[in-house]
Image (cartoon, rainbow, N blue to C red; front, side, top):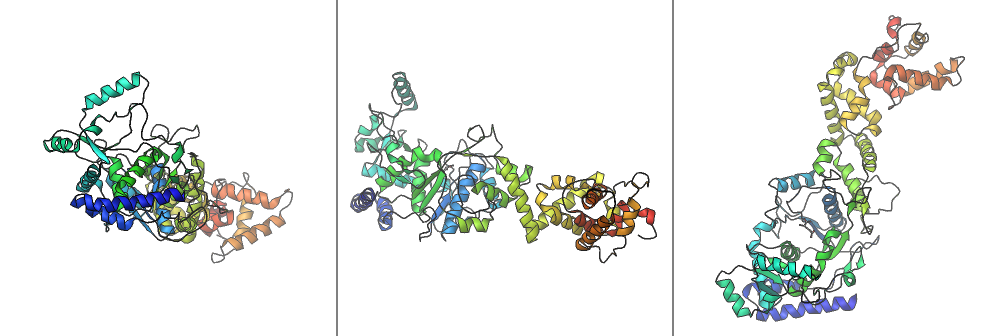
Amino acid sequence: MSAFLLFRVQFGRYTCRSCLARLSKNAKRYCSSASSQSQLRRPNPLNKSKLSPGPARTRFAPSPTGYLHLGSLRTALFNYLLAKRTGGQFLLRIEDTDKKRTIPDAEKRLLQDLRWAGLEWDEGPEVGGPYGPYKQSERTEMYHEHAEILLESGRAYRCFCTARRLSELAEQRSKLGLPTDYDRTCANIPKEESDHRAARGEKHVVRLLIPDAYPQFVDLIYGNVGRTLKPGRRGDEAYEDPILLKTDGLPTYHLANVVDDHHMKITHVIRGTEWLPATPKHLAMYEAFGWTPPEFAHVGLLTDQEGNKLSKRNFDTDIASFRDKMGIFPEALANFVALLGWSHGSRSDIITMNDLINKFTMKFTKGNTTVTLGKLWFLQNEHARIRANDGGKGFDEMVDKVVELVNRNSSFGDYETVLGGRSLRDYVAKIIRADAKNYSTAEGFVMRSHFFFTQLIHPTSVTDAPGIPLLAKDLAEISEADWQPDRLKAKIKEIAAGAQGAENPAKELYHYLRKVLADGKDGAGVADIMTILGRKESLRRLGGDVLRSNV
Ligand code: GLU
């Protein structure tokens, strides 16, 4: 690798020095900055589990042609974690070069959803930064200047071929079973003639003159992948020369992406493997400019259980659906997404954002990752438990939602009688604390906790349940002030010890209490349920009204 890198660095310096003398004013401006940036290839800051110094500048560069989905959130998160782990910066850049496919509210939603997921950017839209603007449609002039630099140095050329000629060419070649790339007709047009035709307003695109073979490169996940990639020249006069500027003068993704990554001083690019085939072209462009490229890490695709790439057709991956339809917590989603193709090496999969940052390494799985939602729900329950333990804003949110649903649900009309003047908010907070590990969504939680909000009809008739009044009588010995889990558990134990005839009296007693107090539903412990319901309501459910004098 080192010989190759040395060549790249020398090549970079050589290009810059000569172009300083040769190129236009703009060329000088950019190349001199490139020259000062030329440096030995940066080390991987988090090579596997080893940490090496050096803050990473990373970016998430979505196109507003779609909303944030599971795959793009994962890409954003890995970039975010690398920057935060190394004390660097995480940038957000909007790559809106494809006007036709742009969705009007996508940009706004991308920002909103990223923030919701906890990924605040250090530089980018709405927050600014030293290398802005961070939206490609506001940087058009810069791309023109850079296309000009490559035209001047002969590393790019204008192509005047009409769309019709190109499609005929492609058709002919495909009939002959040949690659359909460009035949470089316009690469042979003398520079002066090309300048002249452009000045006259003749329609054209600008293409990069790809080298005969692409440089090899080291991907931080796939290793030395360069050798297996197709060469720039496809044989039989077909060349992959990508378009840099379109006929409307707007840049393509390739040009804008490379120019921006360079000028925004990006050191590491983590992106999906779908961009792997484009990387050699990008490297060819870095070489043509004389710039040191960032390090690349291409993460595998997300697939469903049948191995199909996740898409709108087989999986609702829109982040807003996880939030709005499923009620997933942002930290649970971030935790879930982080586990998709990254190995953390710790015992538990339950990881908070802070721990993700502290534990982050560049240990990714090669190849695709299957997404199953079971894991997401497991993490959701675990993060509900963390929220309930921490008792902060996240917990308040859970309480508010449940309170709202109880108020809205007409079948809970008599909850005020159950509460007997107590605060609904406090009551709900206690229920969530006692049963947080079973909290998946507010709706589901309200359903499973319905018995807390309705006056259950208890089997008061002595013939139905002859033991009830006695049980209520014994429990009623506990005063209001002592009505706490430990005291209740001790009393239940005592009652069970005195029971006769049953095989396992304690078990049967608990089972019975759960049936009468909680409609037989699983969840919080019986003593916790009794504490939350309160003395009065618990005894009432146990037929205590038969013992009115004691209650
Ligand atoms: N705009 C590209 C996308 O939407 C960015 C690819 C990259 O990270 O280079 O995915």
